[in-house]
Image (tube, rainbow, N blue to C red):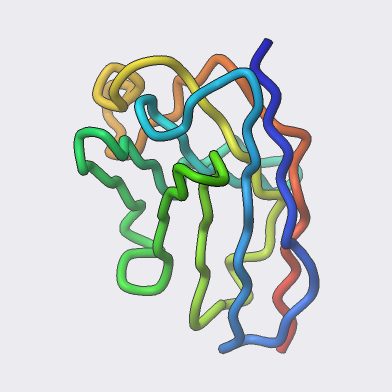
Length: 130
């Protein structure tokens, strides 16, 4: 059974940094696609970043390119999202999500970041203030 647990969210001032962690069990993060998505109440869930470590592939939304970095640690079976230069508009609930195989099949039509995941964590809140 796939189980994903996010941590690392919190409150930070604009311009600051946070690192989110997604610890997986019952699933190997290095050889499958893992992503981070975020959602603001009233809006649809948005793909932020994703990684397929075995294939050396990463995906980023245009809004976070150059500021966010997704990485994977095989020893800890954990995927991280390092968020730098945070902006007010980054405030959201952040979810870790996973599925088997490469990320390409999870990119839905008209989008650039995988969002069609099967397995989801419970979410961690990120709040950026001025």
